[in-house]
Length: 77
Image 1 (tube, rainbow, N blue to C red):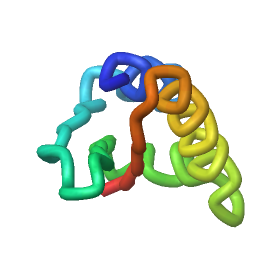
Image 2: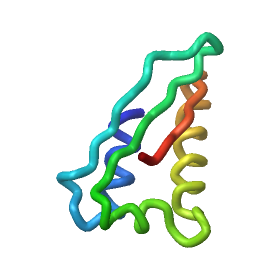
Image 3: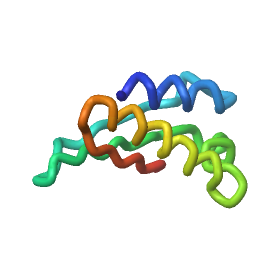
Image 4: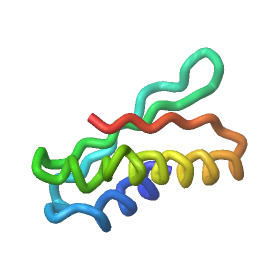
């Protein structure tokens, strides 16, 4: 899952070397939070107009997590 998020983000940004993903420990309800970090100037590319790209990234991650019976949340830092 971590690699999926990183590869999606690297395809969107101009500085793919600055993309990092950190993972929090699973919460009590079993959900896992993924934190996406990108360069400051690439933040707009990852969020998109009115948050559409960010929402699409979250939908893809949730769909992939559903296949493996996980709960996932993506936060863009």
